[in-house]
Image (tube, rainbow, N blue to C red; front, side, top):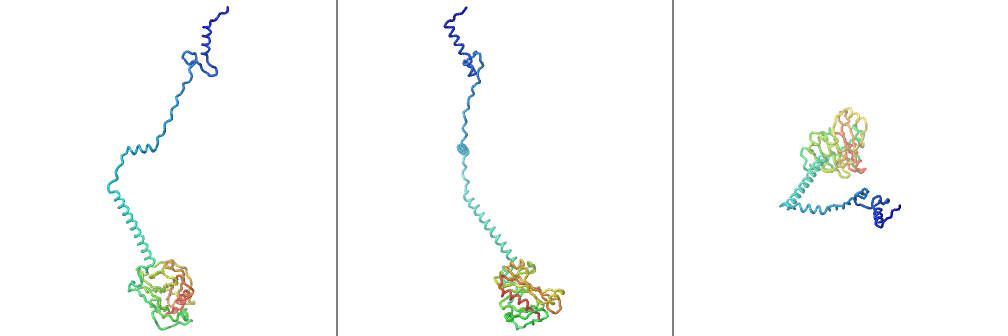
Length: 300
C-alpha cells in the first residue's frame, strides 16, 4: 500500500535534506553538534604586525634617562694648557733636529764650524809667499816640466813637510799644514783645520774648507809617503796627471772632478808624493792650471 504523506512530513524531509553535506564544499552545512559530520579546521587568528622602535626615540629616551653632567671647572684652561704643551714639544723636536743637522754638517764639512780665522795657531795657514823665480828644466830627473809663462809668474811656495817640494801657486791661494803630519792642503778658497786635525778623514781625503767649493774652486791634498819600489817606478817615467773617480769626500764639498798624480824626487830615494785635487765644475783653463801645478812641482 502507498503511504500518504502529510505536508508536515514533507517539510521535515526538506529540512533533513538541507542538513546533508554539500559535496563541493566538503563539509556539512550544519555546523551544530550532532549533525553527523566532523567539524572543519579551526580558523587561525592573524597576528597584527608589531611596529619597530624608532632609533631616534630610543636615543632621546636614553638621553633623558642619563643625567647630563656639568663640565668640570677649569676645563677650557686645561685645554689651553694642553695645546701649549704640545706646541712646546713640537718646537723642542724641531730644535733638536736642527742641532743634529748642524752637527752632521760639522762632521762632513769641518770648516763650517771652524772658520779659518778661528783655527788654532798650531796649523800653518798662509797664502803663497812671494819668492825669487826658479824653474826646473824640462828634462829634470824627477819628471817635472818647465812651468808655462802664466804659471812661472806665480809665487813659489816651499814645503819642508813634503821633503822640500816647491809649488808655484796663484797669489790668492791658501795653504794649510796640519801639525805633526806630512800632508799639505792647497786651495783657491780659505782653509780651516777641523777638530780632529784631519786624522780620520772620509775616504782618506780630508776637506778642511771654511765653506764648500764654489764653481771653479779647487782643493788639493799632497802627502809624503816612503815607498822605494813605487818611487823608482814613478821616476822611470814622465810625470802624468790623470783623472780619478770622484770620492765621497770630494762630492761632499760639491766637487765634480778629481785629478790624481804620484811622483818621486828623482834622487833614487823612497820619497813619493801622492797628490789629489778636487774641483767644482771647473772650466778647461781651471783644470789645465791644476795639471800644470802638479806637473811643474819640483824639489829643492
